[in-house]
Image (cartoon, rainbow, N blue to C red; front, side, top):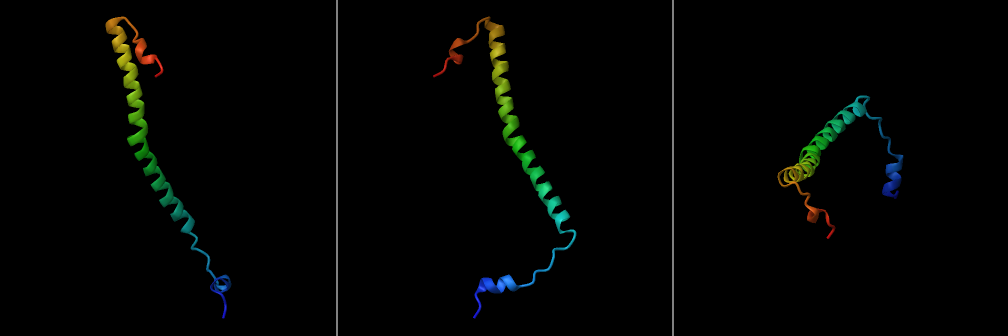
Length: 76
């Protein structure tokens, strides 16, 4: 009796259809593009907006008071 892996090694496998690679790349590219847009909208843009708002808040505080808040810059 032959081993299962030996039987698989002798099995003939037909070639994939010619449009297989094209269809695979189209599906993969579409899903990767959607993933990038979702990550951009849920991660990168809110992170950038938060840091930008900190800078705008510090500018507004400096403009109103004329003093730079030194306590915020000290490492803890």
